[in-house]
Length: 84
Ligand SMILES: [Zn+2]
Image (cartoon, rainbow, N blue to C red):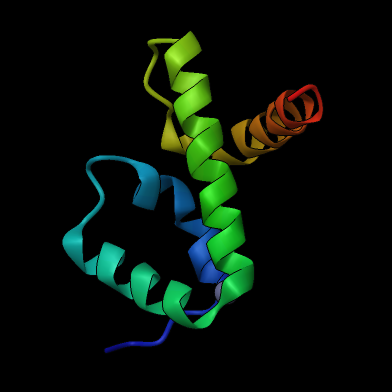
């Protein structure tokens, strides 16, 4: 199996978290996650944030806005986490 880097994981995280992610991409990322705790934390945080975000907004998260959304979601996640 092809090895992917942390940057590739982060770049494709939205696609991975999307229900339409290719099985090939999922297995590449999951393979990386078993070996990389940093990315595991990142994926876990982002997945929770996406669930939160989607529960408050029915609009599907557009992959092409990933940079802006990622920043927004990270802020939202931190704010949510801090008052929990
Ligand atoms: Zn990694």
